[in-house]
Amino acid sequence: MPLGHIMRLDLERLALEYVVPCLHDIGFCYLDNFLGEVVGDCVLERVKRMHRDGELADGQLAGPSRGVAKRHLRGDQIKWIGGTEEGCEAINFLLTLIDRLVMYCGSRLGKYYVKERSKAMVACYPGNGTGYVRHVDNPNGDGRCITCIYYLNKNWDSKLHGGILRIFPEGKSYVADVEPIFDRLLFFWSDRRNPHEVQPSYATRYAMTVWYFDAEERAEAKKKFRNLTDARKREAALNED
Figure 1 (tube, rainbow, N blue to C red):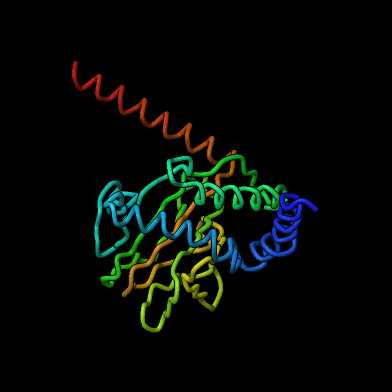
Figure 2: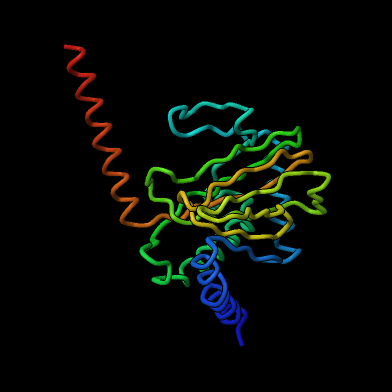
């Protein structure tokens, strides 16, 4: 049986038998050993090179402080990539597999209809005790419905290195701690159901995140943004007169 066919069957089974039920039952799930050692290493080496070459910039805050870097709130350094850049073949392969997984979830994601996603956000916490305070990825209906994070940290020991992603599922009496270990792929709903934080990291911590958009909510968010932009332009023009 061709490798591509086997991969398709495995991804489809993972999507239907694990990812979809977990998202509906508890709001998150993760898959370990997603790419395997060889391909995972290729992704890690490319991310390390970006970091080493100074390609990562301080992460910015959204909301009222949009575009502002506040290291005590958010301590990561990031770069947005499409996966088609030179030397990013392994990253592109990873993104293609994640896309297929989400595609196989299809109409089983409840009200959501996914047609597109963000670019990939490569992130590094440099290991100086920085983290990311409790927040919600999509608190205001910007279209993001699924957050997907791929971790790249070998020999990670959370007792020594910290860096746990702690999820606070809405309405639940428990928290969920996810260690950012190498070749782990995490999914969770992006809205207010899953406030989360990155606890302080004391070793260099790498991850890559993509967000999948619900088509209807994304279109509505873009429409609101255009209307707001047009209103500001009109206001600016009136003030100039």
